[in-house]
Amino acid sequence: MTPDELRRIFDEVAPDYSAEICRGATRDDLDPLLIARFRELWAQRERRAEQDAARGLERAQRILALSDDSTLESSSLADERGITYAALILMGTAQALTRHLSQAEVIFEFREDKGVISAQARENYRVGFLGFLEDLWEQVNRRNDPVPLPAGMFRLPVFPFNEGVVREGILNAVAHRDYRSPESIFIRQWGRERELEIVSPGGFLPGVTPETILHESKWRNRRVAEALERCGLVERSGQGADIMFRESIKEAKPYPTFEGTTDQRVALHLYGAVGNPEFLQVMDAIAQERLEIFQVEDFMLLDEVFRRGRSTFASDRVERLVRLGVLERLGRGRLMLARRFYEASGSAGAYTRTRGLERPRQKELLAQHLRDSGANGAAASELADVLPELTRFQVLSLLKELQQDGRAHIQGSRRTARWYFGPQLD
Image (cartoon, rainbow, N blue to C red; front, side, top):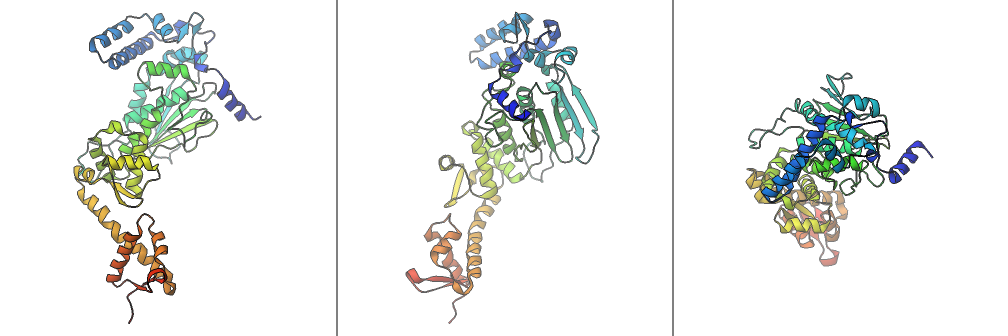
C-alpha cells in the first residue's frame, strides 16, 4: 500500500491523536494566561447557554473559580498522567510547542496579487491557538477594505471577508488538521483578487468530500473540537461549513471552494467579490424575515433561482419556499424570488424587468426553433419540448401571439398541424 492509502486507513481506525498524553510535557508547558482565557470563554458560553440569568451567572462564577489544574482536568485536557496534545495545541507556550509539537503553527502571508512571489507581510504563530486567534483575524481585517458597490445601495458597507466565515475556516483548519504531519497551516490573502486561502495538512477524512461536506460531520481531533466547543468557539455538530456557505450567499459572494485539495491537504478558498449587487439587496430584504427557518440549502436554492431562474433542489424544498411566499412560479419549472423582497430592497423595477422579460424570451425561443426548422415546420408537441417548463396551453398562447405578430403561421389541423416561421402566405 502507498503511504496515502495507509494514512487514510489509519484515519478510519486510529484513536484521537489530540487526546493522547504528550510524553515529557508538564503543566509548566502551558501558559497560565491562556488557561485563564479558556476558563473565561467557557464561563461566557455557559452564561449565554442558560436561559435563567441568575442560574447562568452562578454557573459562570463556578467555572471562573476553578484552579488551572481543575480547569484542565474537568475539560479532559489533562489527567494524572500529564497533559494532552490538545492542551498544547490550545494553550502551549512557544517554547513548549517548539520542543514537543513544532508543526502546530499557523503561518499568515499577504500579497497584493498572485503574481507577487514574496509576501508583503508574513507572521508565524507558534504558540497556543487561544493566544493568537484574535490577532490572526486582525491580520486579515487590516487589509479588508469595503467592496465598492453601485450608487443607491443602502446596505451597510460590505467587506470582502466576513469575520464569521474567516473564523470558521481557521477553526476548522485547527480542529481538523493532521498533527502527525510535519507541515504547518498556511493562510494566504491576496488583495487585488480579494481571495483568502486556508491550507491545512491532512486531506478530508473518509466519507467527506467537497460535495458532502455540508452533510458529513467528522472530527480528526475530537479533543480539540470538544475544547473549542466548550469555550463557545465552534459547534461540534459540524456547522462550520454551513456558516461559511450561508454567509457567503447572503453577501452575494461566490461559494467557498476546495480547489487544490489532495489526500495530503485541504485547501479552502474564500472569495470577497460581490457577484450581484441586486441579489445583495434582495438578501437584505429577506434578512428582515424569519431567517431561522432557513437552512443552508435554502440559501443555495435562492442563489440558484436568482442566477438561473430554476432550481435543481428537491421539489419538496422548492414547494416549501413557494408556500412561505419566498419564491414565485413563472411556469413549469421556472421560478423567481418573490416580488415583496424586490420592493422591500428598493428594486421593484428589477422584479418587473425579470418577470416582464420572461414572456418575450420564451416567444423568441419558439421563433428561433421555427426558423431553424425551415420548410419542415414543427409539430406542437415538438415546440412544447422547447419550453418544458410551460404547459401545452401556455405554449399555444405564445404561438398565437407570434402568429398575430406575423412571425409564425400554422398549416393543417389537429394532429397533422405544423407551425412554420413567418407570416401566412396567400
